[in-house]
Length: 249
Image (cartoon, rainbow, N blue to C red):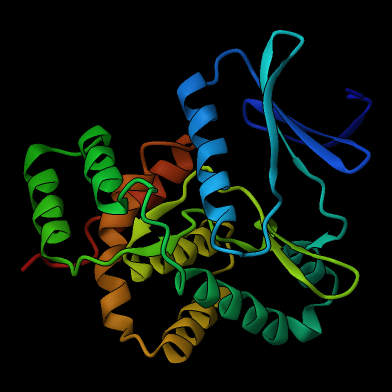
């Protein structure tokens, strides 16, 4: 396996290309259970028929765990949006349509989004009263079984030369409420500093999915608290600030 060509370097992992293969090599500190879960999530999502890089194998490379998938030739939607800002609305519409397509599928063997959020709220730097309020709100939200990506943002979308869209990185995939996944995407745009695009995204998602904006907003404190467990200090502070933006009923 040739690891001469580096595609990307991220926290605790490095991505390489070897011909038609993409090799994601994890640092020794990365949990083996999380690596195997990511491969399993991807294999399960493959069964939906969505355009995603298929898993080829899970192996060890120089003593480190690695997931080998198909390499998808193309550009990320994030880079395309950056290179062609005049057409940002067109690209945002492509992005939202793809997210709604993903959420139209079910994948019943995935972990439940509600269970993951409940666990993450317990790990967040919050007092017991706030954790109780968040869990009460979470329990009251409608229970759905839609496919949720968990990190749906333009950098995880590859646009091929013939215009096909592929969705990468299914490490955080769950089954649950689509509006929770939309709330996560909205917060990701905000974290990147693009609040104007975040607002456009939310308006477009709600219009195209026929979802009340208030419903997605109800998820934001829950999603922000659950996501605050990871990330740097500035991201945690930003996300935790969202926990207090809604009065609890």
